[in-house]
Each structure stands twice: as C-alpha cells, then as structure tokens.
Amino acid sequence: MKFFVFDSSFGKDIYANKEAVSAFSMQFSRLINDDLTKPIWFLTHRPLWRSTKKALFTFKKHGNLPQIKAFGNRFPSNVAAIVSGHIHIAQILLMDKIPDQIIVGNGGALLHSQDQEPIYEDIEFDYSNSKHYLAREIKSFFGFGFAILDLDKHIFTYYNKDNDKIYSMHLNKDFKLID
Image (cartoon, rainbow, N blue to C red; front, side, top):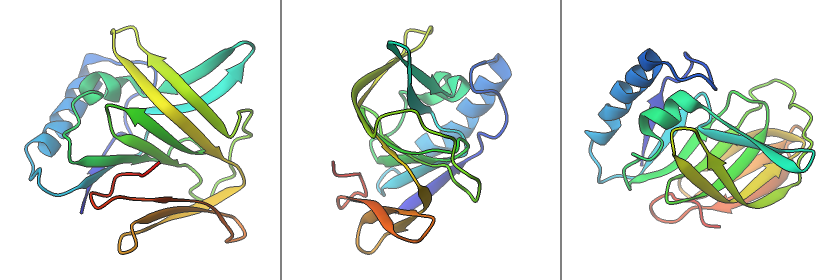
C-alpha cells in the first residue's frame, strides 16, 4: 500500500479560479502517472466532499470546488480511499463510482457542534460545472478524538478523546472500505 500526500492547503473551498484548478490538476497528474498496481490512499488537507447538515427542509452539502474541478472524477481504480481533515468533524462518506472519503478532522482541536444525524443515505452533491456525485451513505461520529489505521489487520478505527473505540471499519485486501 502507498500514500499519496496532496497539498490542498492553498485555494478556497467554494471558489475555483483557473490557477488553483491548474495547480491541483498538475499535482494530481503525478498520481495518474505513478505505479497503478498498488493500492493508494489519497491524503489531502481539505475534503473533496463533506458535512451534510440539516438546513430547514434541505441538506447543506459542501466540498472543495477547485479539487473537484481538477480531478473529482479522475481517480485511478487503485485509489482505495480519500483521507482528509481541515474541518473539525469525523465522517465516512461511502461514495458511488469514486473512492470513499474519510474525514479525520480533530487534530487536537475541539469538534464543531454537529447538527446532523449519525447516518444519511443517498446524498447527492451537484455542482454548477455539471458534475454530480452520490454518497450512498454518510456516517458521522460524535465525541471523536483520533483515528488509527491498522495496515496489518486491515482495520480503520475512530476513538473518542477518552481512548474508547467508537467505530471500526474493515478494509478488503486492496485497502478499500467494506461497508
């Protein structure tokens, strides 16, 4: 297994100027041109998709538009998962036709108060550039403290701040999440 560490610290989440999209595209091309035989976890500071919250009668869905425009639907098949932080929440997004995304957003800071349900199903992410993505399921975790990826046992686990396990997910032989 390999980790591809992607620098998404520059740029804005909701504005996609040509410079940011071009820079992200150029960085991402290294992943596409790399050895595609080993499973890869794509590590990025900013989540591509995130934070489904209730807003009256609708869902509020966010994402990082420059990354989505640059490579949202270009992930090679050996990318097993996307792991990110940036926002202070803990979520697993089980996506349709693209890699699943894990958000490990604590990093020593308090989590944002979360006004969402623990599980949402069939959440669509639609963007003005005609790109559409579907999260089959979004799992949110509360009281989150940190996470551990056990490569030998193929298990990803969230723990609370008191070191108690709050959720585990098994990984297949290619390190993809098993839901």
